[in-house]
Amino acid sequence: MKDRLEFTQRLNRLIARVEAWNYAETDAGAGLPVELARELRALAAAAASPGLKQGVRRAQDALDDGLSAEAVAAALYRVRAELEAGGPQGVSPPPSPSR
Image 1 (cartoon, rainbow, N blue to C red):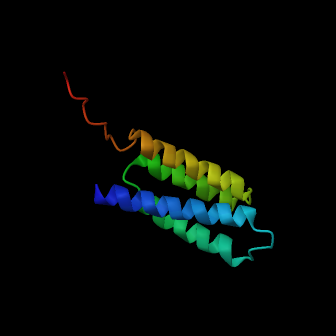
Image 2: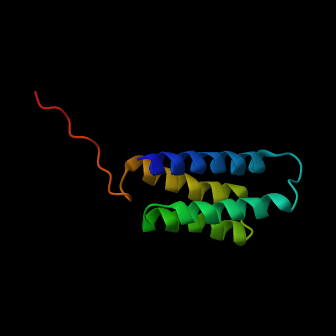
């Protein structure tokens, strides 16, 4: 559970960085995409399931292909949606109490 929380926090920080890059009015410079690529590789390595890893790699591919920050963010939003759904990690919601 701690790993999932840490992964989620890292994912959210990365999404925030990509969004900031997208909305920046000035050129972020060549260093930012390199840093983001490094963070994406580390996040993919920390993914608890093949589905999450593949989602992060889609974001990395978008960055590597020179696509917009919006495309990178969209791939990361999909990873976050998978996490929230609990599907890829096999985590199911607790059963509802019976009355």
